Image (tube, rainbow, N blue to C red; front, top):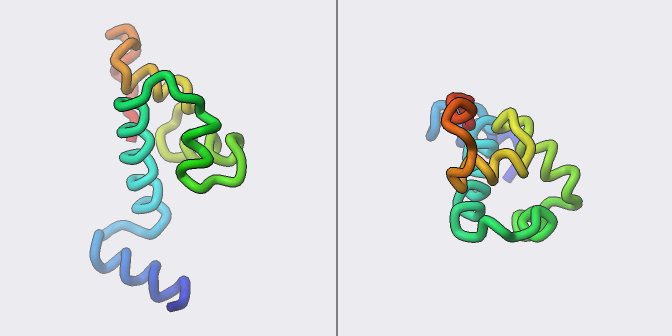
Length: 90
């Protein structure tokens, strides 16, 4: 199956382009991991999700959420001060 066919199928089924859908799925997985294992290393998560390096994982998380993985982990764990929780994470 070609990349174009997959991208078109995702667009038709979700109403989003492939990149946005992929980022949404990534964020769901990352948030779930942080909620279940808040103390786990970012490197472990990046490998578990199939990234080649922790830095490529961090870039993907920043692009999808606007925050680095460490900040997102704090947000998901509920440790961020109330004033800072107004930031929107995808």
